[in-house]
Image 1 (cartoon, rainbow, N blue to C red):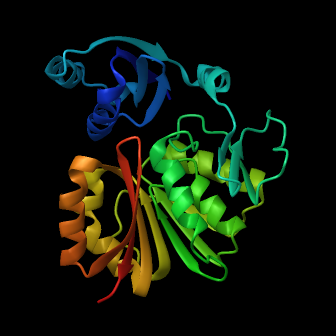
Image 2 (cartoon, rainbow, N blue to C red; image 1 turned 90 degrees about the horizontal axis):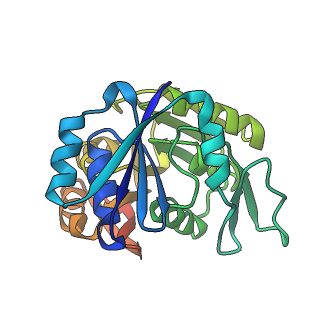
Image 3 (cartoon, rainbow, N blue to C red; image 1 turned 60 degrees about the horizontal axis):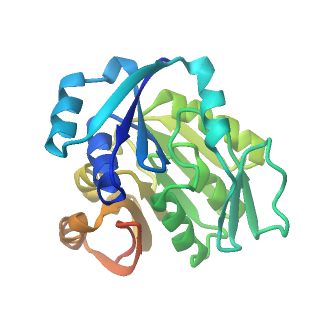
Length: 273
């Protein structure tokens, strides 16, 4: 699939805001490179007028170019460095040497066009929250799986059932490749843009997406949880915290833990009703 890449020159103070707002108009991959932000969107979904409106509101200059799918590996391989979250989980590509010393869990991914390499604050914070949860024998649902990194980590932590969905077919294909590379065969993944047809219930639901999607599907995510189940959320800017917590409260979800990293929040909520 052909993508459009836009490169924005911006300050660190507004990078997170731009990532959040670009996500809401269809951008699904981001690279932070010093004073620039590179954002990717399927070329068919690129709306130049919407981008101009957004960048104009923040007085940010940008350039755009077409990235063919066959060039994507070269793009991410040149920028993707191994990531270590505490000594709990190491994320690397197959062409990187194994971690030394070896972390408790190691996930090998080929991200391609999918979001979720551990570099962004949202993914790293989700992994930190997972670190404090007993996954062994649990049923887990990963909503918006991206590269499959969180679902694969859940499998490595001993979850018995892991179901994962994503709206993008290339994310599903990428996740399947990463599942095989990690031997995480307990993970089942399929393409879907809704939770309406999910009838199973789970001990743990993972959702690292964005504010609007989290608000839209809060009721469905609660429906998927067993009583006293755990919902981990990220993709939330600090200013969005009140809206997320109010929606959670309305559906019987109680906040237990919040992590704050680079102006992005990750939350652990419990299903109490």
